[in-house]
Amino acid sequence: MSRRKPTPKVKEQVANRAEYRCEYCQALRSYSPSPFDTEHIQPYSLGGLSILENLAYSCHGCNSDKSNRIKFLDPISDISVPLFNPRTCDWQTHFSWSDDTLLIIGLTPTGRATVECLNLNREELVNLRELLKLVGKHPPV
Image (cartoon, rainbow, N blue to C red; front, side, top):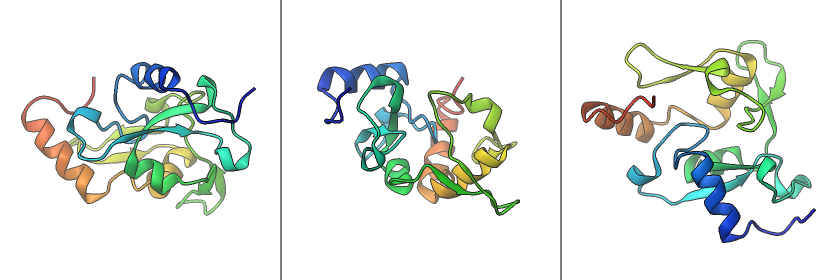
């Protein structure tokens, strides 16, 4: 199994599988001023491979904030827990939208840790969600 960077074909497969949406914050690529990344869930620096099962589609902000982390502290229990893995976890199990659909709420220790670590409610994302909501493009179906 290869540890080299994903090929353009693999990157396109990852983007298509994610429906061109960040698998963490749910942002749409077509409305992002920054490029999206093909992110290693198990970081390359920690031995993660460039195979479909270890790759996620991520906005640059989420990828940068995640960095090479695979665990983070749950802010309620203060225990280190695994971060959300888009290949093995269901988004709706770990997260929900606030009543106004502008904030991502962590429902589980993994969800809460991921919200904190990846800063899923950073100001720019909340502002973008508010604008997309006005034109019927948020929240995701």
